Image 1 (cartoon, one colour):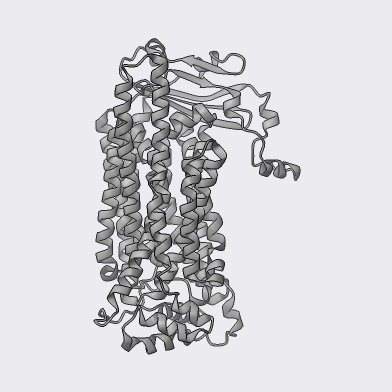
Image 2: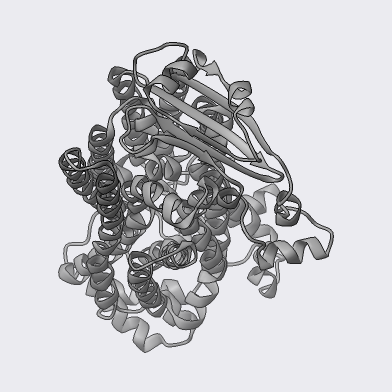
Length: 608
């Protein structure tokens, strides 16, 4: 495949209706802001959910993993139908629906009093994110001129990163509030201290969710002032309305030419009937469609969403104390936003292919470095599985963790220790991680009622047809507690935590410059006009499915096999990404959507 598409010199039109275009970019960027909040807000709330929900709602780490992954699962579900909804109702109406769902999700989560409403709120947030992830890039690609399309995708990604920064700042503010309350609570009696800490942490994660309401309202109301996509209007035969929409986004002198180009789609490959071109998997469409799917899957296989969602946990595990981990998380998000500005300046100058190669190559090196650091820290951990298994009584483990117990388990060590326990009741697996220097973690309690969850409608339905992807609560009700893995070791020093933070900073910087911006362009530019909405839906569905699987398996994997294994896996996937960008991706800078489609059509004709 040729590396590039011939690009003719272009210059920005001087008579463009600037304020309309800027408003369009602002609202499109606000969609990115909500998408970033979807991904990032759980990072600051998760430590307090762990501290309160496990005790009051008896949640397992697997359920907490589902809460984190629910946004991604919701995105998968909505991505499947986003293209059809956008084709049926229009791009503008679909964006309004996404804003309404996001806004409705906030009170559902913030007022939750159990696992089900919290999961529901996160699912609603994810459904909104899936619609935004498909329709905002689709809308920007269809409305903006070729010279501004890269800038539009970069603006979406820039506001996405600002959403991550906003979420991190909210988490940091609450972390300082909780730290101050924890210091004050040290003067209280033990029982009063536990109650006060619980209330402070419970209030912290609810406040974090409430703070997301305003951006949702701004986006939802702002969509009402947008114009509909002129390409969607042309496909519906509403030519007059399409002309009016174009007059608000392109120079007046270019309206007639642009409208004529939209009304005269790229000619079919000689000998191909017109009807055949409507099929998603027709020969002329299958290669750009598959290439876009691979790029989106590889983007998530870098682990970016899991790194951002679990950033505080990762840095805490690496050795940074509570507020320092939150501060590093803010630095990560700020760097992400700053490097996205760099990408905004480069994407229409250097091109998509170059930035993807630089970005994926840098990501691979950063992930390998973080993996080696974790491997070094995890290598010296002691195995205490047999010691804990002997403590199991009546199919439960309740082990007081006073200073003497920590020293016995740690072989007499006096420095802060970290204990990670992986266990199972039948098919129900879970992981617990505790630190000797964390206030309130005085007992390791593993009980069946906290680990074995009630049967679900989905699980029962699968078992009726003799499929067993879910554990059976009936069998687990009598299964003994089995400690599968238990390790203890010194908490890594802060220097180790900052070294891991530096690797993550490098990872995020390279991601922002390359995949962060270019993935949205690949999603919208590579898809031919006739399949763009449905093709983007399927590609983003694959993207979110990969992200959901990685997020759901993150806590169990690092609990069973350590953090190094996860980072090595991500590095291997990123190497594949680099090879795809280097050898398979064409350059699309400066070309109209119709010209890009003509390139793939001509390539298919030459291949035949």
